[in-house]
Structure formats: structure tokens, C-alpha cells
Image (cartoon, rainbow, N blue to C red; front, top):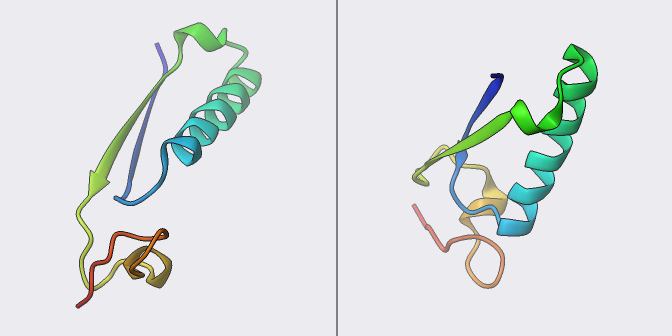
Length: 68
């Protein structure tokens, strides 16, 4: 059972995560010739800190508002 673990800063939308799951699952299935139903994806979200990308640090509708 292939398992993909993705560690990334928090702040991505549900839609972004769904797209990641779809693309990673489809491509891994294609590459290893294994049915998609056997592939699992897990997200581990890292709390924002001063090293997070600027687009996640913005306030407002985009980003989480973390200001260092």
C-alpha cells in the first residue's frame, strides 16, 4: 500500500489539498502501475513561523495573518 506523506506549512485551502491528492495519486499510480485506490495521502501541517513563505504570512483572505 503506497503512502505519500506531505509536510508543509499550514494555510493551504481544502481545494489546494484536494488537487495535490488528485495529482500525486494519479501520477504515482501511473508510475508504479498500481491502482489509485491503494494509494493514501497524509498531510502534516507545520505551524507558521518566521521561515514560512511570504504568501502564507499575509493577512486578509489569503494567508493566515502570521506576522513576525
